[in-house]
Amino acid sequence: MRLSKVAALAFIVGATSFMSVSLALAASDCPTLAELADWGENSTGDISVMSGGSCQFPIKMRGTVSGSDILQKPLHGKLKKLNIATYEYKAKARYKGSDTFAIKATGQGPTTSGTSIITVHATIK
Image 1 (cartoon, rainbow, N blue to C red):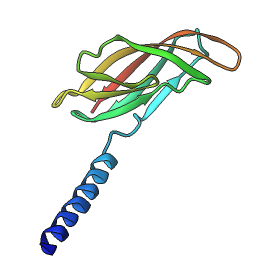
Image 2 (spheres, one colour):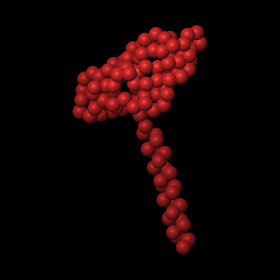
Image 3 (cartoon, rainbow, N blue to C red):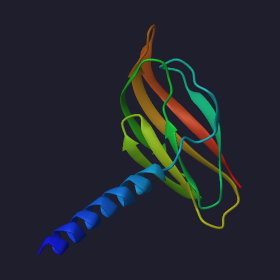
Image 4 (cartoon, one colour):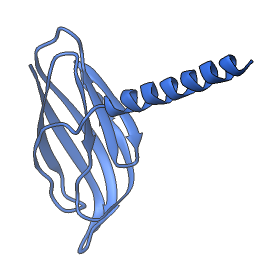
């Protein structure tokens, strides 16, 4: 009976260790070159991602994001909203080239507020 409790504990510890490793392998932020304007102004950005790879694209405008949605879906990958201010882009496997997507975001900054369209051009390597 005592051995089964030890085995169960080892299984739980092993499962917990495996889960923490899985979480550590989550997508990192996209390498970004961006010109993010103030709220109410449109912005553009360039990201780079490996074929079949994924990365997170956080909205990094000064102030607070109050809402956001996908305005234009990418043609050669998938864009997923993780939370109000962060998206994950995943490039299609075996595709190399370019892709584009757009996010419509509303927020309040230190001096302005409004809705902005953030157009992102992806280079898939």
